[in-house]
Image 1: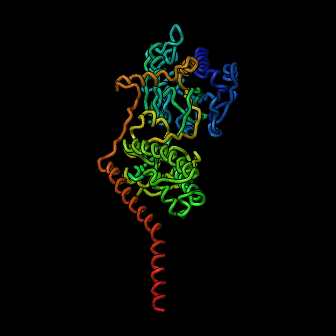
Image 2: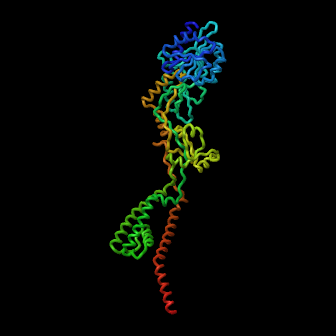
Length: 519
């Protein structure tokens, strides 16, 4: 090549293969090319800031993500040989004749979604120039590609593209930053989900390690769980729920202990058994004292027991009344142990194999996924990214499901800036500025204020109390009838326990008198 073209080529390499991002220049040639000429030309001119390596297309292994690849192509056959390595190259600069630009451009568009850099030369005169294809736009000079102008940061109407790889992720922060860059530097901002579009940066919860430089975000990536809502409790649970099982057990144990003391040491209860005394104390707990007691010991024990019952009955009545004001449900699945013991998960090889989540109940058929009611009945749960919960405010899972409070798998969130992007330095500069200025949560805060303004409330969600239905309020009459029935049964038991021994003694006396008369 001419010295003018070589100088132009060298300046382009220094600009595209910035030593800040690329530690090496990898030169690809075919076996028939003379290595000595390439060695003397490129190593002497490009090896000032970084090492230069020569490699054959046929001997090419996976290139380093920190290598700027310069390929010399004199035919399309050589390009097809290197095709298997195209996707692993962070930045490829193709040096080729002018007649191969269009075929190579059409061929590379099938393999790349980023800018394609050509240094095309005339086969006869060996005069070369730069060509760049990016997003369907061709730039005939490197001076027109990327930031430039008098300040060196002018985008000159070019687009800054953010690739949204996760449909559940809310790119509010990236959009705010991209729009700020576009507004301040004479450009435009585009957020896309098209993988074939030339993108400059994207959100990445996982370190891929290829073709990108990463900027940490002040947030964590987590996994959330969609679980079935709890079942509604039976109306009869109101009678038991005011006290837990331990409290009921302590109350029963107190009645038994007091019954034993009164049956052994009481003045009037001494002639009764423990069973009759326990029934008497149970009736006393509900209706109060039933007769006059004698003796200081008996009066004090019964008095303390009645005072305790007054407190317990008052608490019980108030809790029952409060429980009747709204429907009540079983405990929600808000711990990982509950989810693992209760939920059923559909088999997912990525979740079970790559992420390493091993749940107890796994099913492989689709019968449980036929409808929302079937999933709820079989307690089918789902593990999703927490971005889905944040973007939908928890309203996209149906009436029978909800988001659990459990969050697992915390990893650092990052933005991946593509090394082939000409705006990589500008994006990295603003990413650091936004993080250092604590502006990461500003876009979400602004959207939250807009939502509260539209709803007219101080909170994002209104409290919803579901009242009890008229049929469920029949518990009052049911409890009354149960109380009457229990009172009648206890009264009959007291009568039987009190008068049965006397009746047995009378019958025995009559039978003895009859036998004496016969004798």
